[in-house]
Image (cartoon, rainbow, N blue to C red; front, side):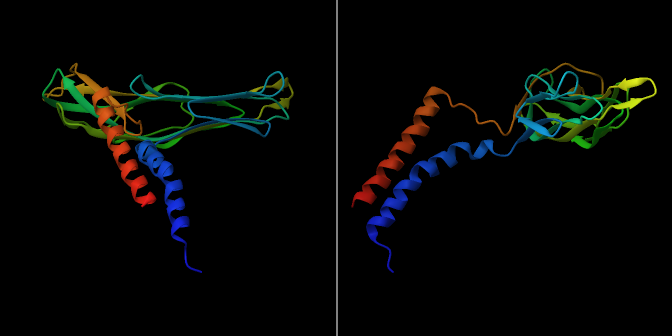
Length: 243
């Protein structure tokens, strides 16, 4: 059965808002930031934070923060006999690092400090990356710091820093000879960037660290041009549809 011209036009009309929506959000779709908390089988999922409680004691929470403020991930769980609690935080993202002042050239390192502490629980950070730093925190109750290899930079030239990290904790709790015991699991990690001059002496710089997945808000003049152009395109498409 041949497709009617009118139905083809109507189909194109219905796609115009969808096409414009895809154009606006496509650049924000490359980041994954998920936090989950599960208490006795009931899961709560959030973007930067999630938490749950079950009864008086079992508790689970997961939180994350992203640049430009800081980069951190924390999961905490408390388990009670008969209840299982777990928390997970996941970040898969990339950021643009640009030195804007202080040094014309030098080096930077990506660093992370973390710990994991458990009792009747399990979990940790395994196989995580932050820039060129590979890091894991499994059963490391004392905060430990790792830094990656120095990477050269030039002021004004942006460089991508990727983050791919997941941390989790699951607590059970148990009843033993000393009575009821609460299990707990705590995992935390903080990341930052350190700068050095050409002689590898610590140096202060001004810099920006921007999430590549964030959709920037255009300045008024630029916004007018963008949306004015979109309006012209829509007008041309509508004129063709009515011809």
